[in-house]
Image 1: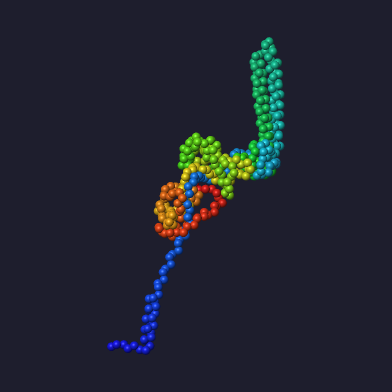
Image 2: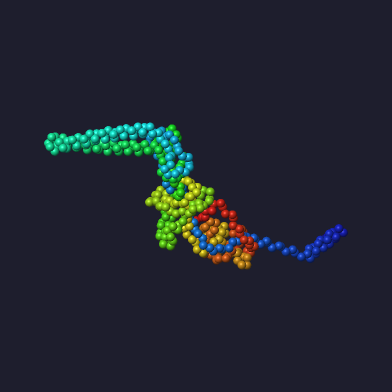
Length: 391
């Protein structure tokens, strides 16, 4: 049975056919290509790179001398400004001399009595000697007189030594600076009874700070490396230029004076596996003081004609290292490289790159092999306040 078209269905069918014809005649719109990826690149630079190594140390005086009270007594006066500079021979402390003066007086009186006994003994010997020659007295009497004289002479010598000892003890009541240097805070105050426990025996410490010394530990392997290298270095260079040292202070600044090794400890510390080394640095401005923190560093090697790239350009995956290289056509390729030393924020590339090639530094995760990229020069980040390079 055939369906009959009504008057309303005919216009609808004609409209649909017209729309279909118009749709077929309309050209299809083409899809826009994706934007070109923009990345930052850096060239492979070739240069001689100094390799630094550093060690943490602590400053100390060239001489750190303990100022001791060698006699007992009440501290009368302190003659210096604590924490300031003092000169050799300058009076530092005064100790009450009352008892010491009495001891000196008693020792001198003993010496006077001994001299009197010696005079009597000498007189007896002089009187008995001619009498013994004419047999007016026995030889035994003369021998006794001579023995008394010898004993009296020994007593005089002992009494004189006691006087000198008591005078030395008296001089210890005036404590003088043994060297030029900076002195610390006094461990005793005026009125303290000093010179024996539990009261202070060590009154202070005086340090010579020009030059300043820095003591730092070096690992056993490092020591072996340096010990084998230094004889060769000394043949190449003058003695003063062997391993010049720099001192980086706690605020990141570098001490203006270079230093050198003063001595190396006799033995390796078995508990830490390190060897103590002490270096010295001139300190004419007397800015450095004992007990400061510092890092001693030195150039231990030079990488000649090293190919360097930024550290962030290197990708590590399961121990394998690679970089993305931008070719002349603008396409990128991933290339496996062999790494060398890391210096500051850069890597040395031993194999896999040639000088002048460009490596991608930013946007590494989005890259695919063969993709064309738009490049812009990479700007290194600002250098931190601490200028110490890595090793």
